[in-house]
Image (cartoon, rainbow, N blue to C red; front, side, top):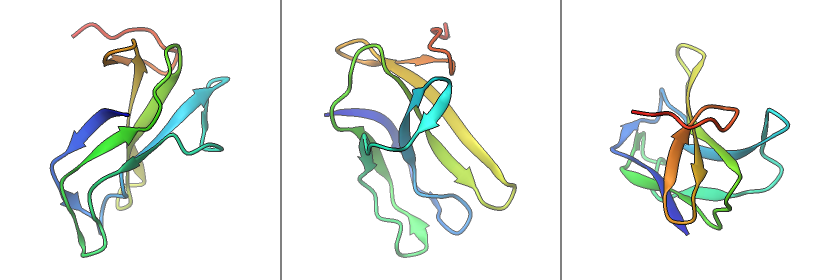
Length: 98
């Protein structure tokens, strides 16, 4: 297991529970559950928590984020696993240099 991202709490009436999926053929693949969020969102406010990938694989592109239900947008980021850490990339898997 590995932590993909940490969330510091959020308004769960506006933002969805953080999610993670893989990218397959350029599209989001939700057919297999690859991770979960550790925070509780049932009380109206999203508690701080971690987005965990249960079995990270090298060469896989992970998409993750939250949907903004008021503006109809999603805050989506992408990362790949190098065997030790997640590294930011674009949807095609190209590394992002920060």
